[in-house]
Amino acid sequence: MIRLEMMETMEAPSEEAAHKLNDGLASDPREESSPSQDPVDDGVDEAVLSDSEATQDGVDEKQAADHPEEESKEPPPPSAEQIIIARLRTELADRDEKLKTYITAYKQAMADLDREKERLARERSKVLNRERMELCTALLDVLDNLDRSRAGCQSAASAAELSQGLDMVSQQFLTALQSMGVKRMVTVGENFDHNLHEASGMIPAQGKQRDQEVIFEERAGYLFGEQLLRAARVVVATVSD
Image 1: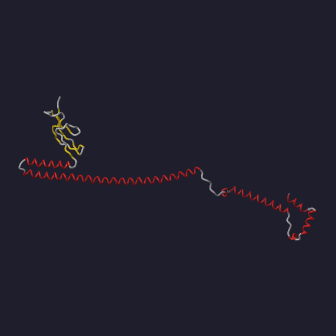
Image 2: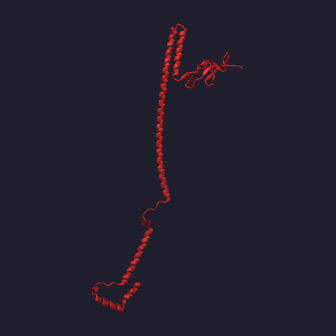
Image 3: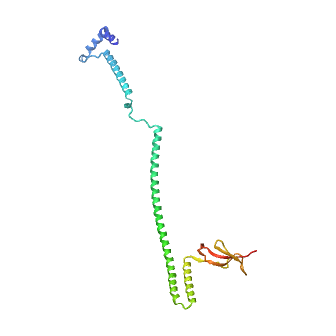
């Protein structure tokens, strides 16, 4: 419609416009060689260009709607749940590393403990063997004297000499025990002590004998240091009411 009106305007120009056009052509000969620009054509071109731009904008908007991922290439920020999961995974990995370290240290400590136990067992065995050797060495001396006493019995002039030899052997044996911490208890004349003595019999007290006094020793008792090695077996006097 606009184009038709423009065409009509171009077909019927006013006389005044015609005179001005003729005057302009006559005054400026350079304008004869250049084509005249029609304002109607300019308007038409602008309208067509506007329609084309609008159409292109619509196409661009449709493509942007169909492919939204092409419009923003940056990834979306992680959600709170994803952040928590990532943090928990990191903490779990750290704890796994610590657990492996603790397990390795525990195994190493147990191996060291086993080696230490074996070393202590070897040392204890060495100490016990050394003490047994010392005891056997002391007893061998006693055995040698017993052998001499037996040999002397055949050539002894009297029983007194034999008894003297046996007393010497007994004293030597007791000395060997004392060197290892063994001590013989004195029981006769002492009061009966159930922690140290075993009563094998009880007889009425005679003379100056006291009640519960040990008057006879059947078997000697021994102490190892301050500990009881063997209780003495004794006979105890009693005073009847």
